[in-house]
Length: 393
Image (cartoon, rainbow, N blue to C red; front, side, top):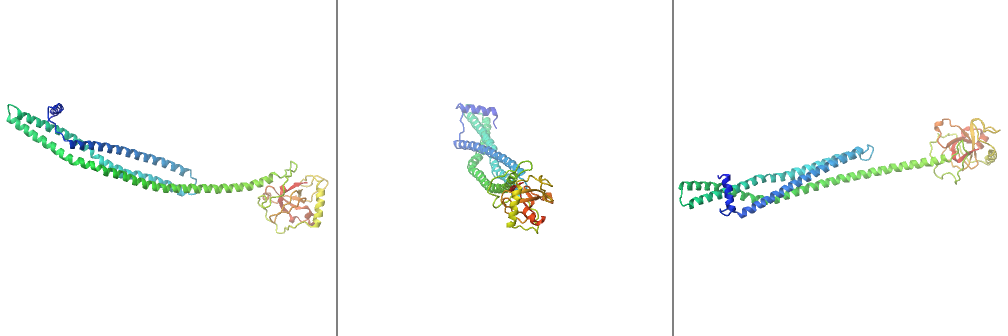
């Protein structure tokens, strides 16, 4: 072969127009296409890798977000097991998506681009061997045109020319076969890359849409569960509020009775309480005419009576043994249970202590109507009644 200095000298002569240069316009066009194809393929590979990196980043972000929700999701909330399974399925879906793009699209593109360096090196070698061929041809022509022909040198130059031509033509023929085929292959590579990517994206987003719908359904049920609990709590608080309101209107031992003017007790809902076990002997009947006359007498008497102690009411008259103090009804009260007293405005009630203090509900008292006691002296006709419907006398 020809040495580098000779090759450089030949290139200079060709540029100066003092030596013929082999030109192949069709091959030069193939090389231009090759360079364009290699640039585009390399750029596609770079962008696909960037896309895969973004998928991995999104996967990591999705996993952290799902893990955060799973950690916060309390065991008694709706769909706890479904939420844990959904978190795992989402993670697996991201993994499969990333792996499929890597295996099917990026790996195929890498294989496609792997052939470019070798072909590029062979194109460069062909260019060098073409210069060697031109140099050998030029040297051989110079010897033939010389005035003193040295047959030995001419023969040797001819031999070198034949060898240079053979090497060049072998490289040239192979590349002229490969470059057009490689240029055509680019279409199939682009189709496979983007068709595969589109297919994986469609599958991924379809499956992810189902998981997102499941997540949305779980969140909807969780909100419904919260609303039901909130409504139950509000209802309970409403009951407690009604009870508290009646208690707040009840008189205290240290302050004078405060009568709230209202049309009467609630028509359908008495203050909530745990009622003591009803006494089967207890019978409630409306006041008779005789009892009404006693009631009137008791009402007149109550105007001069002050608050009573455990033994006496603090005046000249004493309460019957076992009673604490006396109260007078300031509202009608319709009994709603068998162990409750029926009250009419003005009824006097002798108050008793509960046998078991734990059975007493806030805002409720135990007692016997004074009119009934005056007739029977029977403590078994006792009953409970709301304190805020009465006041001490």
